[in-house]
Image (cartoon, rainbow, N blue to C red; front, side, top):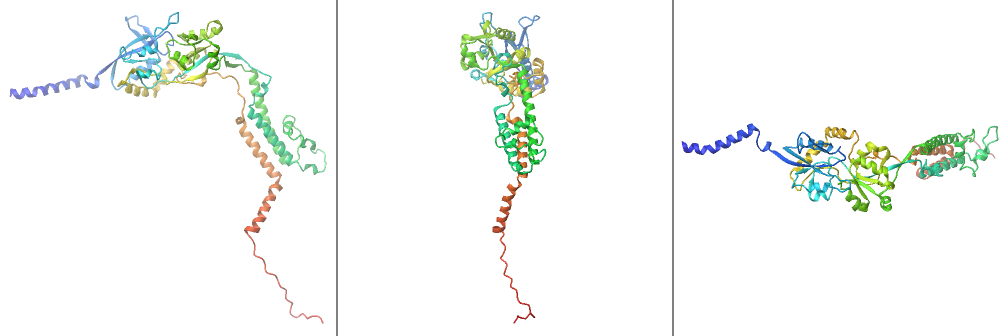
Length: 476
């Protein structure tokens, strides 16, 4: 009996342990994954990551911001429980503009110091060589920020600008077509007897026919044409000319009166060739982009930490120790434009990247879980609420043309009046067909005659013989 009990005792203990795990919630399904989280600590752009020392707890920090809210939302959607130990990593510069930390150095702390790095971390190809990135949770890209120039740039040929060259050419072509069409329809009117109020035939001579539609659009005269078809074509032309003149007047007025905002520099080549100073964000990879891709001299690059420094440097300009342009990622520049948008504009090329993401150690098993959780967050309404909390209703990710100021009214093109041109052309063609019925009816009659002769030939009729009537007598 004792031997039987001793053999059953291990099985009893195992069953008891499983029961205790089930009742207390301890087991594989309730295991807590501890994560050491690194976040960048810097002076500017605290809308993304804001690290504040907690006075009530020594060596503790209150960390908030757009990136942290997204991370906290992602954590709640993970299929396992996590315990977070968040620690800031300083990224700033002193008065001599010497950087004390960079995003590259922060990422190199994985996995020795951190298990995951959270914040405004841009996904780059060279960074993926030593860390793994999750899917991006916002778009990005490097753009150039410059000051705008107010004023109207006018020349002696500004009166041509309201219409593009293709529209001017189209007007000349259709005006000539209208004049030729009316000349064809009115060519036989000279044979009519002269009556009171008859049209002046000299205005339809071959020498002046090209100017006839234009003269009628400017100074229309009554009974300048005689046929109804000609009057119909002239009426359609006057309607088109009225729309063109009104559009020309409105666009020219806009060009002459509206304040046109133009970027002070249009491209990177102008800045590089002239040797101007340009700025970038402290600790950002944008420094490598400016040196390696845009070929700037490193001595011409100045780091800045926040939007106030951006504004001050651009306001000073190159003549007073400032910079000609600021290069940074689009989300940061959109935050800047929300405060100083009326005086600055995005210009130049865009250096594209994948956007912000979370960084983990190479070949981490957690990357896939975090990426799936990011998809759940970005596709939910919670993402919109987080963006509105820190940036308002304007999207901060990716390139948005609405943040760029238009340089002024554009010239109207042929496409703007293509419908009217088509209506005028069809109406003129129909009027020609109705007016010159003889021209197209004669070929139809010839074709009908030929078809009756060769396609539907009739059998020849036999000769009719006349026989003499009986009862008549031949004269003797």
